[in-house]
Amino acid sequence: MTVQKITLSAEIPEKLLGKRLDVILSELFKDYSRGTLQTWIKQGAVTVGQTIIQKPSQKMTHLTCIQIQAELIEQTPWQAQNIQLNIIYEDEAMLIINKPAGLVTHPAPGSPDNTLVNALLHHCPSLNELPRAGIIHRLDKDTTGLMVVPKTLSTHHFLVDQLQQRLIARHYQALVYGTIISGGTVAERVGRHPSHRTKMAVTPDGKQAVTHYRVNKRFADFTLLDLKLETGRTHQIRVHMHFIGHPIVGDQTYGQRLHTPKNCEPELAEKLRQFKRQALHAIQLTLTHPITKESMSFAAPLPHDFQTLLASVKNNQEKL
Image (cartoon, rainbow, N blue to C red; front, side, top):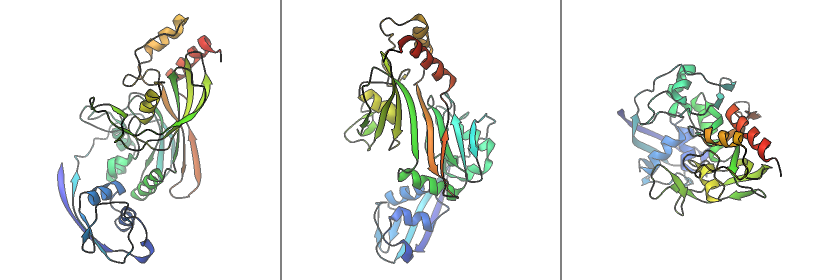
């Protein structure tokens, strides 16, 4: 890891007056990601006129000079590894991938390699020039489904902005314990668990989190849900489903102890025992293309293990 001193300056152009400080910086300093610029603002590294401003959302109303004096921490380059990717769509601007279960999104102390980032760098080496190799949203290790990965800095800025404005629609399917009568919305804040630091929880001082859900199919002891994220907090769907008393089947962190429903057939009982991950899949992704500005929608079918589990539930419990 190396530390690079960064000194930047520019005048706020009239066309950007009235916009947020972080948006203005993204327009003026396109070599840096919105996240990096927001971090510098919060660190007190950004001076507007003669005033240090530490609020990224503050709107600029005067034509004045912006100066940045910051440190850029450069991580040791991640290694490209020849790991198979299931690519749904690719062009010069972005990739849409279908992530399998068991694949960690990016390197971390417990998973230094063999991650999605390592696979992406092998497929597209230029991603090494982007923050986090183009990763702008995550799926948990054992959650499957669709992710978008920008391939250039300009498309990175565009898609991050779309995420922050909640303009990228992310739809999921999950199999949960219990019978849910109707759909609804969970709008409980999600933050770090107060005593288990590797877990998240509904907490009053957490970040705003909104999950919409509707019933796709009810069974005697389970419900298949369609879910839509309005925000994208860590473990959000899993935490929210646990909070409303309907944890996701197979969830080893937020689920309940394995139990087999009354009158459960041996086949279903065995499938439940074998399913060691959360039954959660990112099934659809809808976004605006960064270059053409065309609305595009992508879908990925449930993975085989999820389909097999669901078939067993249907065979045993198709009553409602």
